[in-house]
Image 1: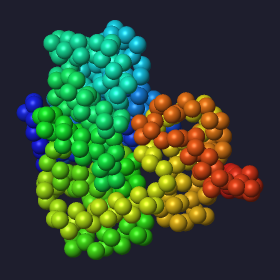
Image 2 (image 1 turned 180 degrees about the vertical axis):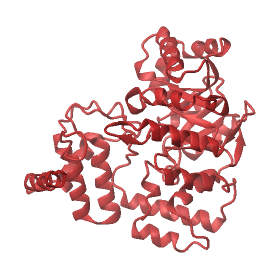
Image 3 (image 1 turned 90 degrees about the horizontal axis):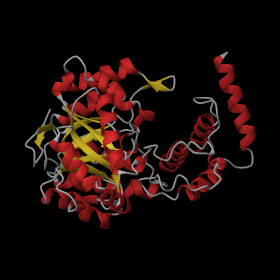
Image 4 (image 1 turned 60 degrees about the horizontal axis):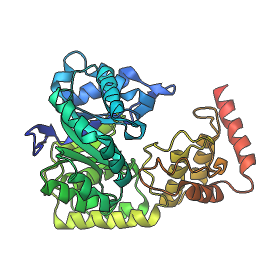
Length: 401
């Protein structure tokens, strides 16, 4: 495992952090034994930064992580979690949520505490409520050690948030598709120039950059490389190639994913990709942008939908149809998952959207979700859709009998 130093704290942090937003599931809930084994196994292999947040897994992620860090594992890691800004109405709320998080995590302090999902408007509101004083007090009394923020806003607001408080670190979305998105490269370099550690989220763009079989046009680009790498390794190494990145978060929920991520984290030094390799990644990024239709990362912040639409799944199958060109398979999967036969039992098709707009204020990617769902419905459903639903329901029912 390679380590990089958090500039203001001197902490030697594993370049690979364990993200607890997409833990393994079983029967609609976190598969606790498996998730705990995965987290502990990664720590045993050198990971020493674990990241969670109040809303992950419906509020259960922090509790699960607290269980995973028993038996001496808490002393081996730096724990990061986040103040749920959208639930904060008063200065007192900040203390209330932090104290509840300490209890859920089973610890008396949080090493890296983030103000969650900031953008310009939310920062102004939190600042007016006294978030700076709250962070100062929480540091003085030892409940938190280092203060940071995660960012999901417009690039023009990033620098003023960086300058608005003496943060130790920040967390941004960054990958080879998002070089100019949200904070982007300019924000990464600005934060690093101010001495902030930079934690990167969404290095695989919700998994899309790590699909084992990439779109043919992208695969052709990777095949030109003098050194063959998996799509996951290309994406992770590209992020770690930036010296300003301190930690990269990966939402690892398959044992094979963890093994691969750990292997890359053993060798991915900053500046280790050649100019030719960097050009290949740039070309792959341009090709993906030509193929992808909706910039959804699958974070699920838009959920639950009042109309029952499974928004991230709708966008995922829509994107995959355009990336891979297999319309029949994409429509089959969209219909199967959307019908509820493979999960909740309730339908979640794009056509159920009533354009209420509730999702718009929640989406960190600022996607025009109702408009995009209308596109999904038009392309993925069609006049024979209900007949297709019934056929697939019959297929799944017969398979369970």
